[in-house]
Length: 326
Ligand SMILES: [Zn+2]
Image (cartoon, rainbow, N blue to C red; front, side, top):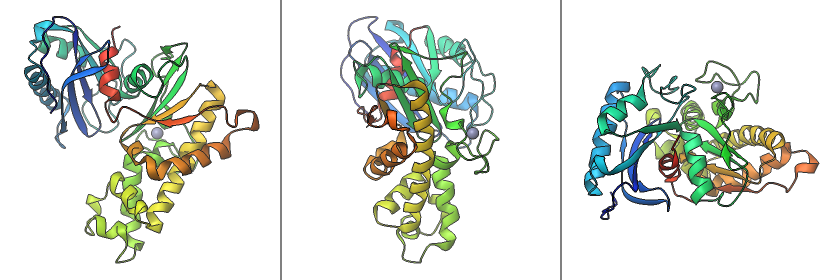
């Protein structure tokens, strides 16, 4: 936990991030993008919406205490949620990864708990705002931010504003890249998320264990227990030269590269920034992803749009949530 004293009134935002597997809270000074106190916890695996809310409220109170800031001194709450929201961004539509969130009035519940206004957006939009204002996308007019973590989403900045469409713009993870591809959590086949999200890499790693050699990194890293194999370990096995893990990442990069190239052709952004947990394996993803994007871009787009990785070390979602004010 990081701490530093906060004294002036109404300068601070409590930022809350409901991720697919983790909950995080931070006290943020939004104008400068300064995090005063921060904490993160694994979401309790069997928790429903109400229990996750209670866990988050406790985290938020911890952070306020660490930052020596009463909730009465908060400017607002900024909330990132890992799934689609209602059009007015007051309620959760659903979570693809956690049951029981359908129509949950999350903004209202948090306002009651902390006594100040709450503004919400999905995690990819929040992270895109953070990265555009304080990270790799600083100063740009347009940016395509792709969040690759438990799921995959996008935040699109056009003319220095988030593009929300009628509410669901940026559901990039569910763009089809192979009509007969694997089944996705959304119920459809062949989504980019079904190849390249954290859950898909874990699934492919577990399936491949059957054919992995006894002394392979894939087998050793999980102690031969399939349930322990997650996306991070698949990336680590690839790093250690495991051919099966490398084949899984090649397939993921192909799918992600195809969807990214299509999005670049549609939007012509000044840059693409990749963030989220899976993107922390930039060392083994960057080269194959750049090659895949290039493979699927038409000639007039070649070399036009730089592909970058997040510069905010995992804080982009909390920093972006702190900027939400409408
Ligand atoms: Zn899908």
